[in-house]
Length: 346
Ligand SMILES: Cc1cc2nc3c(=O)[nH]c(=O)nc-3n(C[C@H](O)[C@H](O)[C@H](O)COP(=O)(O)O)c2cc1C
View 1 (cartoon, rainbow, N blue to C red):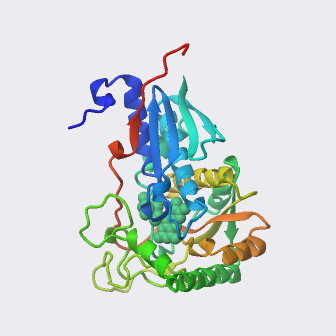
View 2 (view 1 turned 90 degrees about the vertical axis):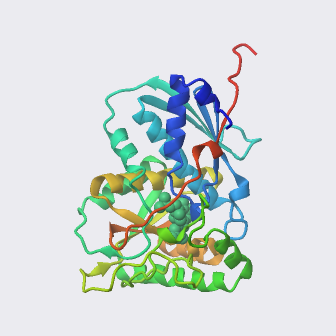
């Protein structure tokens, strides 16, 4: 067995750093690609994008890859804070190394932050939902609270309240799905991240992560075809007359510009509001980013529904209903490398 530096020297910073990374990997990522790598030197963690895991067809610019890494960055910050340190973050610290997304240091000791431990506890409870939501009451002030969370990270959360806007977004999602199915390269790429049942892979969207037959709602946002037409997925017991099911709150995460820095911001804002929604009311999100991968449809959504801001994520939020879903992650030793600490004065 390869002994990691942390096992050889389980000193406090190494243990804290490892714990923080172990938490960060539970961030959401497009197709569960987990497109990140963490290089540790002393109490500094460098977050890098792992470009081999970018979706070359669906995400040629790496926008969704950086949103995913941004979500991991926010999770890292929360973990560091919950461990009792101020996270000192420098985003895109080196223009010559565009894949180096952030340097994060465990800074001064902090105490008395009761938000961070609650958000930290929610990291592993948060799950992507794929299906309808229960028609439960959501506290009316929650959407505004979530908007504030997104704004704290320099992004915006726009809620589509009008039924016609929701219908239009659902229709665009459906159109995107059809266009993508016409493209064999796109379909092949999606299939590569949808392992067969029983696969031991620790990435991708497994059949345990989506329902076998998701109920329809009105408006109806189609999911991605991770089952590849095989009927895979978690099947609930026999259909019974249950409570009415709903679409949930329909929301767009947007940014003022569309640079890598904005994508990282959008990811941090996304994870911040998802964790807050988990903590406050155990809400879960269903993502529908298909239309944002088709440039013409993304531009249409930007111009019509985002006040000129750039749409980064389209999601629904609500109280999950249906079978228990589970997801996987790569072991932390696959994503972490331990680098020697620089010798002072050299
Ligand atoms: C940028 C981005 C785009 C995503 N798009 C979709 C999507 O269109 N459909 C979907 O079902 N899940 C989508 N997801 C959710 C991921 O599939 C999910 O985070 C991943 O499978 C890990 O599962 P977990 O969130 O339950 O931990 C997206 C996530 C991110 C960060």
